[in-house]
Image (cartoon, rainbow, N blue to C red; front, top):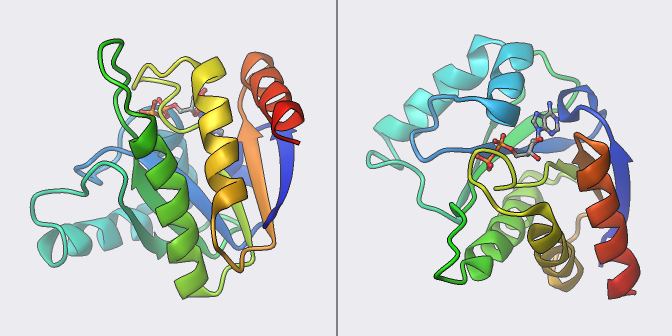
Length: 172
Ligand code: ADP
Protein backbone atom coordinates (compact mmCIF):
# COMPACT_ATOMS: atom_id res chain seq x y z
CA UNK A 1 0.00 0.00 0.00
CA UNK A 2 1.43 3.42 -0.90
CA UNK A 3 2.12 5.98 1.81
CA UNK A 4 -0.52 8.72 1.52
CA UNK A 5 0.57 12.34 2.00
CA UNK A 6 -1.72 15.39 1.88
CA UNK A 7 -0.51 18.86 0.93
CA UNK A 8 -2.32 22.08 0.18
CA UNK A 9 -0.83 23.67 -2.93
CA UNK A 10 -0.34 23.68 -6.67
CA UNK A 11 0.20 20.29 -8.33
CA UNK A 12 2.34 21.78 -11.12
CA UNK A 13 5.06 22.60 -8.57
CA UNK A 14 5.40 19.08 -7.16
CA UNK A 15 8.72 17.25 -7.43
CA UNK A 16 7.40 13.77 -7.97
CA UNK A 17 7.89 11.18 -10.71
CA UNK A 18 4.39 11.68 -12.11
CA UNK A 19 1.52 14.08 -11.66
CA UNK A 20 -2.05 13.13 -12.51
CA UNK A 21 -4.17 15.45 -14.65
CA UNK A 22 -7.95 15.69 -14.27
CA UNK A 23 -8.36 15.88 -18.03
CA UNK A 24 -11.43 15.79 -20.26
CA UNK A 25 -11.96 13.10 -22.92
CA UNK A 26 -10.63 15.31 -25.75
CA UNK A 27 -7.17 15.51 -24.11
CA UNK A 28 -6.92 18.93 -25.76
CA UNK A 29 -6.60 20.91 -22.53
CA UNK A 30 -9.19 22.83 -20.58
CA UNK A 31 -9.66 24.87 -17.45
CA UNK A 32 -8.79 24.15 -13.83
CA UNK A 33 -5.89 21.85 -13.11
CA UNK A 34 -5.75 20.75 -16.78
CA UNK A 35 -5.17 24.33 -17.93
CA UNK A 36 -2.51 24.88 -15.26
CA UNK A 37 -0.63 21.72 -16.27
CA UNK A 38 -0.57 22.60 -19.99
CA UNK A 39 0.37 26.23 -19.26
CA UNK A 40 3.26 25.36 -16.97
CA UNK A 41 4.33 22.22 -18.84
CA UNK A 42 4.46 23.82 -22.30
CA UNK A 43 3.43 22.59 -25.78
CA UNK A 44 5.18 19.19 -25.65
CA UNK A 45 2.32 17.79 -23.55
CA UNK A 46 -0.38 18.83 -26.03
CA UNK A 47 1.67 17.48 -28.95
CA UNK A 48 1.79 14.07 -27.32
CA UNK A 49 -1.91 14.24 -26.45
CA UNK A 50 -2.67 14.89 -30.15
CA UNK A 51 -0.66 11.81 -31.15
CA UNK A 52 -2.53 9.71 -28.58
CA UNK A 53 -5.85 10.90 -30.06
CA UNK A 54 -4.67 10.03 -33.57
CA UNK A 55 -3.52 6.55 -32.59
CA UNK A 56 -4.90 4.91 -29.44
CA UNK A 57 -7.99 6.99 -28.65
CA UNK A 58 -9.52 8.57 -31.79
CA UNK A 59 -12.86 8.99 -29.95
CA UNK A 60 -11.27 10.45 -26.83
CA UNK A 61 -10.15 8.98 -23.52
CA UNK A 62 -13.06 7.17 -21.83
CA UNK A 63 -14.07 8.15 -18.28
CA UNK A 64 -12.03 6.24 -15.70
CA UNK A 65 -9.15 5.43 -18.09
CA UNK A 66 -5.59 6.83 -17.85
CA UNK A 67 -2.77 7.53 -20.28
CA UNK A 68 0.73 9.04 -19.85
CA UNK A 69 2.65 11.77 -21.65
CA UNK A 70 5.82 13.71 -21.03
CA UNK A 71 5.61 16.39 -18.33
CA UNK A 72 7.39 18.90 -20.59
CA UNK A 73 8.84 21.74 -18.50
CA UNK A 74 7.27 20.61 -15.22
CA UNK A 75 9.50 19.23 -12.45
CA UNK A 76 7.79 15.82 -12.78
CA UNK A 77 8.84 13.28 -15.44
CA UNK A 78 5.37 12.32 -16.62
CA UNK A 79 1.80 13.54 -16.66
CA UNK A 80 -0.81 10.79 -16.31
CA UNK A 81 -4.08 12.03 -17.81
CA UNK A 82 -7.31 10.57 -16.52
CA UNK A 83 -10.95 11.52 -17.02
CA UNK A 84 -13.09 11.72 -13.90
CA UNK A 85 -16.87 11.26 -13.91
CA UNK A 86 -19.19 14.24 -14.10
CA UNK A 87 -21.09 14.25 -10.80
CA UNK A 88 -24.69 13.06 -10.87
CA UNK A 89 -27.18 13.27 -8.00
CA UNK A 90 -29.29 10.51 -9.53
CA UNK A 91 -26.57 7.96 -10.26
CA UNK A 92 -23.65 6.73 -8.15
CA UNK A 93 -20.50 7.19 -10.26
CA UNK A 94 -18.01 6.55 -7.48
CA UNK A 95 -16.78 3.36 -9.22
CA UNK A 96 -15.59 5.57 -12.11
CA UNK A 97 -13.79 7.93 -9.74
CA UNK A 98 -12.13 4.93 -8.06
CA UNK A 99 -11.16 3.58 -11.51
CA UNK A 100 -9.33 6.86 -12.29
CA UNK A 101 -7.10 6.35 -9.27
CA UNK A 102 -6.57 2.63 -9.87
CA UNK A 103 -5.81 3.06 -13.58
CA UNK A 104 -3.52 6.05 -13.00
CA UNK A 105 -1.51 3.93 -10.55
CA UNK A 106 -1.39 1.05 -13.07
CA UNK A 107 0.07 3.46 -15.65
CA UNK A 108 2.54 4.70 -13.01
CA UNK A 109 3.65 1.10 -12.47
CA UNK A 110 4.21 0.65 -16.23
CA UNK A 111 6.37 3.80 -16.24
CA UNK A 112 8.28 2.82 -13.10
CA UNK A 113 7.07 5.91 -11.23
CA UNK A 114 7.39 5.59 -7.46
CA UNK A 115 5.97 8.96 -6.35
CA UNK A 116 2.70 10.20 -7.81
CA UNK A 117 0.71 13.38 -7.11
CA UNK A 118 -3.07 13.50 -7.61
CA UNK A 119 -5.42 16.49 -7.64
CA UNK A 120 -8.97 16.16 -6.28
CA UNK A 121 -10.31 14.65 -9.51
CA UNK A 122 -13.86 15.65 -10.57
CA UNK A 123 -14.29 18.20 -7.76
CA UNK A 124 -14.02 21.31 -9.96
CA UNK A 125 -15.96 21.78 -13.20
CA UNK A 126 -17.21 18.17 -12.98
CA UNK A 127 -19.11 19.06 -9.82
CA UNK A 128 -18.29 16.22 -7.40
CA UNK A 129 -18.69 17.48 -3.81
CA UNK A 130 -15.20 17.17 -2.33
CA UNK A 131 -16.63 15.62 0.86
CA UNK A 132 -17.95 12.77 -1.29
CA UNK A 133 -14.94 12.46 -3.58
CA UNK A 134 -12.28 12.38 -0.85
CA UNK A 135 -13.22 9.02 0.77
CA UNK A 136 -13.57 7.40 -2.68
CA UNK A 137 -10.11 8.63 -3.71
CA UNK A 138 -8.46 7.60 -0.44
CA UNK A 139 -10.03 4.14 -0.47
CA UNK A 140 -9.11 3.50 -4.12
CA UNK A 141 -5.46 4.31 -3.41
CA UNK A 142 -5.36 2.23 -0.23
CA UNK A 143 -6.83 -0.77 -2.04
CA UNK A 144 -4.68 -0.48 -5.16
CA UNK A 145 -2.22 -3.23 -5.95
CA UNK A 146 0.76 -1.04 -6.93
CA UNK A 147 4.50 -0.58 -6.55
CA UNK A 148 4.04 3.19 -6.12
CA UNK A 149 5.55 4.17 -2.76
CA UNK A 150 4.05 7.60 -2.20
CA UNK A 151 0.74 9.06 -3.30
CA UNK A 152 0.57 12.77 -2.64
CA UNK A 153 -2.86 14.38 -2.83
CA UNK A 154 -2.32 18.03 -3.71
CA UNK A 155 -5.37 20.00 -2.66
CA UNK A 156 -5.78 23.46 -4.05
CA UNK A 157 -7.80 25.00 -1.24
CA UNK A 158 -8.32 24.63 2.48
CA UNK A 159 -11.74 23.03 2.15
CA UNK A 160 -10.48 20.23 -0.10
CA UNK A 161 -7.47 19.71 2.17
CA UNK A 162 -9.73 19.33 5.21
CA UNK A 163 -12.07 16.94 3.41
CA UNK A 164 -9.13 14.69 2.51
CA UNK A 165 -7.76 14.95 6.03
CA UNK A 166 -11.08 13.70 7.43
CA UNK A 167 -11.32 10.91 4.86
CA UNK A 168 -7.79 9.76 5.66
CA UNK A 169 -8.42 9.79 9.42
CA UNK A 170 -11.61 7.77 8.94
CA UNK A 171 -9.89 5.21 6.70
CA UNK A 172 -7.23 4.41 9.29
P1 ADP B 1 -12.61 18.30 -12.99
O1 ADP B 1 -13.05 18.67 -14.40
O2 ADP B 1 -12.13 16.87 -12.89
O3 ADP B 1 -13.62 18.68 -11.97
P2 ADP B 1 -10.97 20.66 -12.32
O4 ADP B 1 -9.62 20.99 -12.82
O5 ADP B 1 -12.08 21.57 -12.69
O6 ADP B 1 -11.27 19.14 -12.78
O7 ADP B 1 -10.92 20.57 -10.74
C1 ADP B 1 -10.34 19.51 -10.02
C2 ADP B 1 -9.73 20.04 -8.75
O8 ADP B 1 -8.44 20.58 -9.03
C3 ADP B 1 -10.51 21.15 -8.06
O9 ADP B 1 -10.61 20.83 -6.68
C4 ADP B 1 -9.64 22.39 -8.28
O10 ADP B 1 -9.74 23.30 -7.18
C5 ADP B 1 -8.28 21.78 -8.30
N1 ADP B 1 -7.19 22.56 -8.96
C6 ADP B 1 -7.27 23.56 -9.87
N2 ADP B 1 -6.03 23.98 -10.19
C7 ADP B 1 -5.14 23.23 -9.48
C8 ADP B 1 -3.72 23.19 -9.35
N3 ADP B 1 -2.92 24.00 -10.06
N4 ADP B 1 -3.17 22.27 -8.49
C9 ADP B 1 -3.95 21.43 -7.79
N5 ADP B 1 -5.29 21.42 -7.86
C10 ADP B 1 -5.88 22.31 -8.69
